[in-house]
Length: 250
Image (cartoon, rainbow, N blue to C red; front, side, top):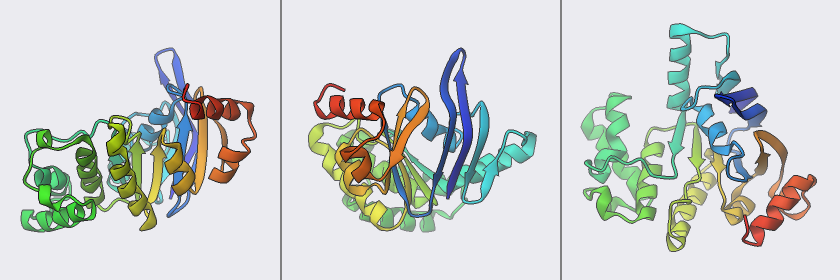
């Protein structure tokens, strides 16, 4: 479903991604873990071109964007990739002046040109899935952080993506609100959605991921099943990160 090949990203003199290659299969849940500044979020944002890769190719559901593509053809391919990917950010990115239902259906109206009545029906169904149909007419200021993030998940799912990208979706939440977002993410995974999740929630990665990727200094250091990564990590850098993290010092 997703194929990343020799991906590099340079910001000025800072080499953030150093030749990342990664494949994610259909229905697979891949969690990306690592220290702050290791390139995790840049990798995720490069998949749907919120960050423009310096070099390397990205393919989502058969739509490939390579360095050789330029001009209009490149723009069209990137647009297709963005339609195939739903993105959930750590800071929600809701429109404060729009109601919950209007936040959810905005892209359906603008990007997919779906008639409003049909878009509202779709939006309400996904608000129901995340347990927030009773908040359809509220505004973001009146929601908790966990509710805002569930609205953001509903908004992304409403576009019918093939892949969901989650960029540390619980990092801005108070501890007591994390569980409600994790529960929704687990439900999305159980329905067979392909997911790439950048997260510090080790319990979610252990319980829900099919594969865990550990990144450090712009490289993939180690990847494997959660049981292998968390119980018998092979690389000393992975071992050190997990020891520090699990001891609450990371």
